[in-house]
Each structure stands twice: as structure tokens, then as C-alpha cells.
Length: 266
Ligand SMILES: [Zn+2]
Ligand SMILES: [Zn+2]
Image 1 (cartoon, rainbow, N blue to C red):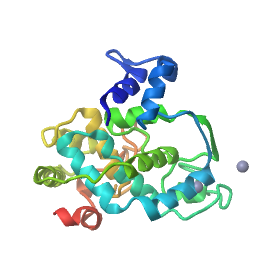
Image 2 (cartoon, rainbow, N blue to C red):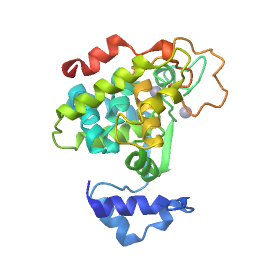
Image 3 (spheres, helix red, strand yellow):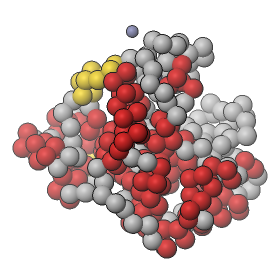
């Protein structure tokens, strides 16, 4: 990632005291052009749900594969290139989606979207996006490894970005970290929630709390961390998490999914 463009993106939204007011308005026209030319910032996007879905299908069929997103995730562990992580969840959330129209089937119990197909895949989606500012999503991706992981438009941007990454190398150290991450899950107490696992990951890979939270969400959406029940008392009680809000240590991880995604390395 080109350093000056990254700095432009970051300083548009963030300062030493946190989020900046004004968003894109903080970015000069000259800087914006620069970061756009480097492929890191974008003009406002107008796109329909249906266009997002068909573009995603195209990406899955021709431009990325499972191996690429798995490698990107592993490569990010030692390098701390946090923006390479969420392709794993973006891939998992959208891989099984068939081509469909927003109004083709209405969700009976909309939790994420009125579109039944998106809703069933835990995807938040709108019928259309008008002058949508992707830059804030890109900033979150670059700063923490993403925040709004299950937004259709985030998944699309994320996979577009990862499809442009050159071949990534996975090292022994990356794999060692993966194994320690899994070991930490095994060591969780039954009653530990996602916060407990986050703390156990603290010394496992170079990261801050926000980055670890992001990885937990990614593993939740990737189907690695699955809550045994959605209706535990944690639900709606203001845990900081989305995909792993009701996960507990006793749920451990999905052996099948771990094998499917990372089996080559384990
Ligand atoms: Zn949909
Ligand atoms: Zn409509």
C-alpha cells in the first residue's frame, strides 16, 4: 500500500484525538486525486443492490478464490497489514450468494436486509446506494481491518481491493500464529465470551484491541466461531460484538470450517 496515499486516507478521517468531523471535506482536491490514482480512495459511488450482486458473482467466478483470501489473512498476521484480513469474511459471506434481485424474495424476519437472500447470508444490504462514500469504509479497513464487515457494499469493495493484490506469501511464522490463535480458543473457559478470547489473543499476534475485535468478527462471519445458541442472555446486552455477540468458550471453533479454510496449513 502506497504510503502517501495511505496517509491521505487516514488523515481525512482520523487525528490524534480520534474521528474528525467533516469526513471527505477534510481532503484537498489535490490529495484526493493522488489517493484515487493509487487506487486507495474513490469518487462517490452510485450502484444498485442487483449490480453489486452480479459484480460479486463475477469476482467469485473469475477474479479471486478461496486460496487467495486465506493467504491474505495469514500473510497479515506477522506483517500487521490489517487491511488484508477481512477478505476472508467478505469471501465467506458472499461466496454462496446466487444472482438475485432485491425484490425477488422478501425476508420473512429481516434481521439484516429486506432481501431474503442477503438476509439469510447475514448481509446488510440496501436496494441502492446513491453517492455512497466508500472512503470511510476503506479507512476502517486500513486502520483496523474493517468494522462493517457484513455490509454488502463493504464486501464488494473489500473483494475488489483484494483481487488487485499481487500473490501473497505465507510464512512459517504466520502459520505459527494461526496455531496459537486456535490454541487460545481451546484454552478458553466455558463461560468466556468473545472479550475473553480477545484478551487471550493479546500476546499471540502484534495487534491492538480494535484489531483483535475485527479479527473476531471476521472469524465469526467466516463461520469459524459459531455460537451454540443465539438466544443466550448476552444477546442485546450491549456486548461490543456483532457476529460473535453470543459466542462462548464452550462453543469452541468449527473443526469442519477450520479444516476447510486453513487445512492446508494445519
Ligand atoms: Zn440481496
Ligand atoms: Zn424497490
